Image (cartoon, rainbow, N blue to C red; front, side, top):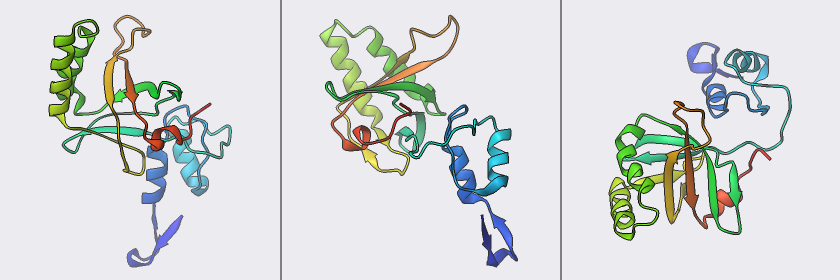
Length: 173
């Protein structure tokens, strides 16, 4: 931990909170920060059992600066250039959800699919990596997880992209 001279030796925990906030509960990631940060992470429900040398990258979907949600894009198929993952909705998801609902019924109807794409483009969604770097994409869909338990509100995001920020980012595997 760094000491901040301007505050008479108080500990600056900003960097440590940022490290903890980028972790997902149950992830097996180790991070620098000393015993205090490790205890804080353990109390927050994070698993600290194993050490992995690479961090999992979280991708964020925003709309006009409002977070729609995040995903680690755990499943990536380099051949088809499609990345999928569990989607954790943010505060802005409720605003974007009606547009993504159009996609559910659009799979075989060209007119509805065109309407969905026009509405999605109007949202001006932005995808960024954990460092805030913009990630380009051709397609982005968020839909309910069909494998979820009945009544559970779980979502999946699917992104079609050639951007190396997706394909070079570490995954849990």
